[in-house]
Length: 65
Image (cartoon, rainbow, N blue to C red; front, side, top):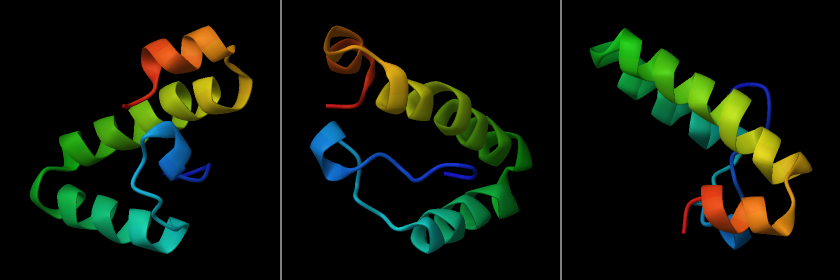
């Protein structure tokens, strides 16, 4: 979400552009800063790394359905 593009539809993502993702993260963060930070970290350091560098088996296991 923050440093990388959100997961594409092919990987089970919503296919949001960066601006839409930021607006969604802003809305979540305004009511729960901790949750907004957690979601940003999970996507940035977790899912985007698997999306870019993971093997097909890892993508199947860890990316959203």
